Length: 261
Length: 363
Image (spheres, rainbow over the protein chains, first blue to last red):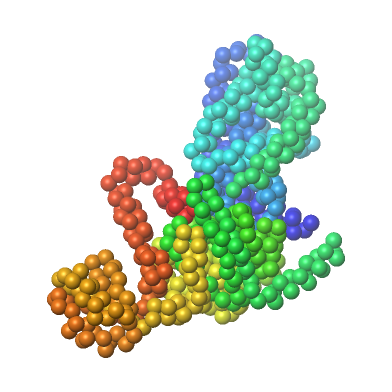
């Protein structure tokens, strides 16, 4: 058991080490979400005059951007598999006497950790956006970010195991990530959209992620009725969906990773 | 659980006493259109430096891949350190160290971190790692550069680091796939020095593939492989003895005439064409030279007497030179300079495409 944990740790350690060492990537990873929050947030706010909304626009916008950046961070971290394949290091891992299951899990947890680090940094801007929180709610937010990051990391592994070249990532991000992001409810509430869009969003894990984050992030700033106005699912439904999704996608991604050669 | 691990330890000890650490019997492997291995058999003794010699595409890499559990054979048996390569892949992987043709280092990390990751992957304890790290980095003369990122290393330094990285879990057998390809002569010599040091210190068996004949000559035993078949297997000395005596190569103004006359006067000695020259294999060649000059009438324009090399052995067995194909390929690569595609390498990381090609060719 100890040896298995050690292998899990070493794969995880490398992922995190590379993320922290690449300081440029580290800063750009929080720079873009902050830009969106500041410029988009301020700009879009002018469309809706205060009396129309029952809440501050930043409060609506922040959980969505948080969810999206964490998800994209988790997925793009798993692209390290494709880099490793291109530069040969993947072979070094694959020929070692380690079970593929632990390599895949280590990679998933490594990507989840990078997403958690990024999420925590973004959370530090909450006081400036007029979002209240205390320690228990902060811990709840971190736990939800973990759930989201893990699921997206596993999804990333699922795709990355099949990608042969790093250029394919742009295709992946256009065909899979972009639609998921637009249908997540981060930019507009999914309450009153046409039914075809609502049906699609119904199967979108990111829609549940954003809703879950709205419930936990805003719990100290708004009351339940106000949060209900901007979400489609209740918190327990979101958590249940995310948990189920995580279990299924872990199974699938490990299976895909085992086929890798 | 405890019983099992004890048993595993016991067998490990037994495993270390096996004399023939690699045993291969009638191994076959087919890819879609070509037969990569057509039933090869050989065995390697503990502590031996065993060279696999052959041109590109002969089946060298396929053999290594099967022995390292990276590819499955179609049929035949292969045991490495007493373990079956198909049924006990993890035990095989634990007993071997591997250096591939292409680099498999992590460029973002330092030399030391690369070694650390490898040690952890192979279950080396932290205490052992710290002890071995020092010994091993000193061996490859990278101790002073251990805190530097690998991306700043030269090709030769990377190769050296890879070689010692494969040693950090103290494997019984070290597999080297073309360990010196693309290196300058000085680095090449150093790599060979390390190979010998490792063998002498740890009695590690070394299995290597090469297309350089002068390197193959330094092995204890060589197998010559061509088109998926082992055509000869012996010590370099014995292989060269097959040729017998010396070799005289000469060129005349009328080679056909010279050949005719030679066959008439010395029917007991074989004579062969090599390109535009004639080759004779003969004992006491130095004494035969003056006789030869007198014996044939066409004017001799050049003449050469030498000891047989492995190149001659290869030529003798397969009927062609080992480097022929390689030379043709090099020319192609040089021509790429005029190709417009080289413009795009500005945007793509260089080398990766060539690497893929090389892999494909090897299959």
